[in-house]
Image (cartoon, rainbow, N blue to C red):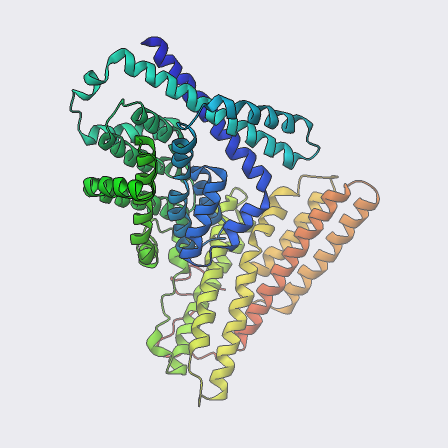
Length: 542
């Protein structure tokens, strides 16, 4: 019995190694095509579903697709609504492993197919001139090891069944919850639902467990895939955590539904297998069952994707996201331009405060985490987009020319502020990353420029003098850097990077100055609903 247990563990280890080789090899072979597919073909939840099915079917790893999707959400390249569709599709795509195991793993002598593929894959991995085709060789070798691991797993489970006796195993009524838990733990421990499914299908094909119990274990394995997503978002953005929760909810709801209607599902599986004239075996029935309940779950959840995204959007809210939400823009005011202008000015004052705090922190707090800077800059950008969109909906027909001009000026001011906020990480980089590199003269030159930038940012009344001083110090620092590059005191790469950062900081100063000049043209008398810029809401007075 112990030898069978070690054989099972060895087969499982070989299977896990094969899955990793297949996934890594295919991802590297496909390269940017998969990224393009995931990033561009997800405009709607339905297209995201298709992309999730296709990519998961190619790389044979729903966990890899889920983690990649979370990364896209983290970077802001996918919305929560789009990414939920991808997750639904990944659950369907991962059922391809079950079909592969059931069709190929139990139909003929596996070793006869695996050995030639393994030899071809290793040869391609060693001899291919291109890294891309070397990755394909690695994937082929993994594909062959997949079947060898499956053969070892099948043989060891058959030996265990013969040693223990099927009546002993079936004689105990463990109940469906036990097998549900076993499937979940198998995926949790191996971090691979494919490996868990291979074990379940192999055990069912060897009559080690009955079909109904194996179906419950498949549901548990499907639920266990959420553990990878949960682990990967421990330190991720709020949107990524929402996506992970959406993944858990989808798998939990789908699994619960499949468990409730399990007898009907198994009857449907038997009917479909008979109607399609498929060879009746437990592995094939389980692969069909796995596909059916994931497709059923996707059909039920896909129409609710938008509502689900809105509900998830209310969770894990960060301070930056709360700041990005408008507080004065009321849609009922768009028919009254003067009142809409007052609301837009209040939000613009908030945006001034957010941007000013961000720029000052970039200068005064050297240990401020870059992620926090980017989050605050993103919040400013979202608030700017909201204000601009709101103003575009205001019905200005018949309004005074002064009102239309003021609304236009508000849009311009907000754009200046949003761009200045987006460049704040570059200001922090100039202060933290470049003051200590190169010759000793570079640090004081950067300090002089930062002092001029700080005076411009911190001035309550920004005039042309502070803007001119910052521009003069920029030109001096630029001449210093170029001179050091000519004298080879700075490498060309370092010098170019520094000049790019300096150019971004100069752009930041220009936009901040323009925003103040634009606000200076606004009427000085506030409307009845308006508060001064120095209200506690903004946290600062610019």
